Length: 112
Image (cartoon, rainbow, N blue to C red; front, side):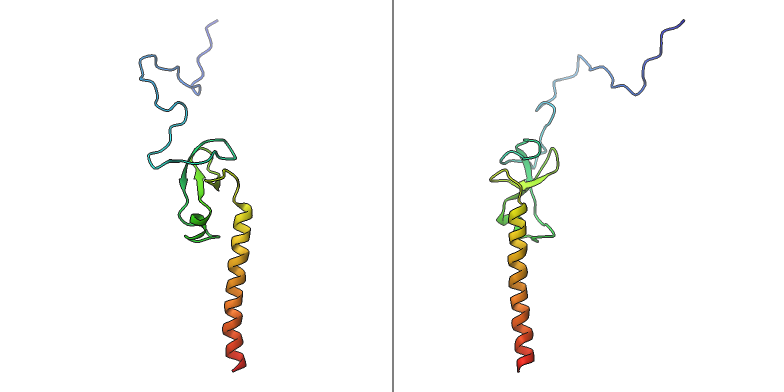
């Protein structure tokens, strides 16, 4: 009997002559900034979110909305908590203001 052939899908053994990897298992990208720890994975490196569907370009800046570079979760970079409540409040207020402006425009148009 011959010895079984090695698994071709297994990871190759580490190269003892390779230089050590910088940053350990996770090295942040060059544009990363340190923020509060991510509530999903605890990573402290994230990138700022520039535009979202719920807040355009203003909302993410108001709430320091950042995206974790390790797990991809978006959260508040100052507090390290989810922005769900802030987003709901922002959408409700901007919808109310927009509705009031539309009511004023159409009310003035139909009353005159």
